[in-house]
Length: 139
Image: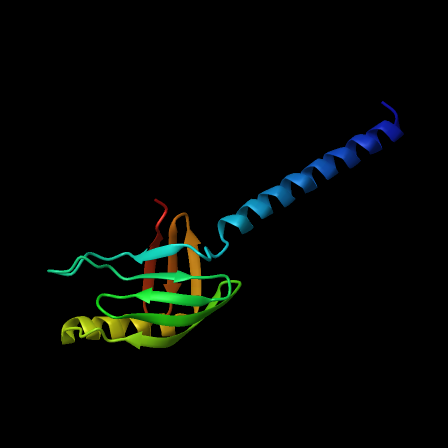
């Protein structure tokens, strides 16, 4: 093998390595993309006497539909990289008992305090003063 052949082999090996690294990076980036348009449910047990568990859906523009323990409404998420900002919109009371209304208010406040998010498989966590973990509804 001459110097010219060795140079081509080294160049090809380098090019192949670059493609493999780029593909691995793309796979990682895709795995961490925010799941816009998918409904997600809070990782929590149902409250006694209730069939509901809070859920939210965030569209590509950040417009958010919230269904809480009793209340429901809208909001706006802004997501850039792993940074998140949530601003609540109109939240309907729906005649909630005071204990559920307080839980709803606390959940909306915790979403508003979130500063980052992360995704691991079908789980999305919003991290702030406390971590709120949601599961993507994949069925």
